[in-house]
Length: 152
Length: 152
Image 1 (cartoon, chains in turn brown, blue):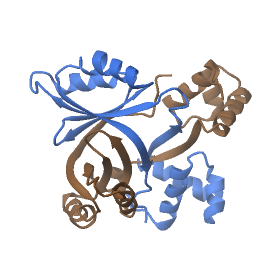
Image 2 (image 1 turned 90 degrees about the vertical axis):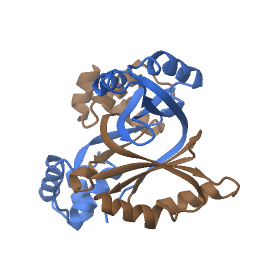
Image 3 (image 1 turned 180 degrees about the vertical axis):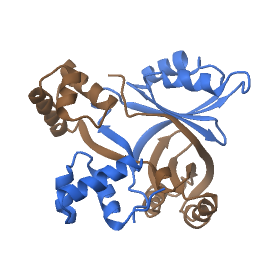
């Protein structure tokens, strides 16, 4: 599918304010509501607009600790990535899994209610994951910017 | 901090899967009336449990084929205020996420670019010129998945 300037304008406005109703989105993008709706449908069908998801603020639910755990895996084992991934998916406190090309192979975002709880998860659920060669942790202090926006 | 019951958690799961679903549709799926579902969704929003929406786009189809995570260590802490760094980093359109962290690095940045050459341009012209920037580590994102988290 070929993206034109109208699509880009709609997507830019949608990224800037994802909760917008189609009518408001259309107005901001300078198109009619019908055009806006049709364009969004086409973008969805083409798989470019993959979905809209609610974002949970875990801190508001009492999950005060968020840690970014960076793993180097033992790559001498041919199934290291698959087995690590499968095991990480079983840990409910893991809210994000990413794989990388670089010094870090894998990153998990882990949340916990407090430091005591985190220590418990770390010992019982994280250190027991398969094929870990090295772990580094970054404790989240604050998120200053977090948008899925693209410089369209 | 608010307490959730099973129905709230089911609503959260539904909205994380698809934020465009109406209160009526969610109510029908869970055996609630439209007004009851609407009231619960409203409460989750007002209490900050749902902090917003995330648009999931196929970035590659829109011409942004590369996502890189940067770990940045500030070189001149104290001399350059964190606010200066944060303000400058946040203003870069290719920077999607800025997080203040504790550990090996001071900040985590998520950067999107058209390709590796474009990423190099962003890195040289915009990242390396940030106030106080010191050591920078880059890891290229290969894949990512978001997990539902501990929603029972």
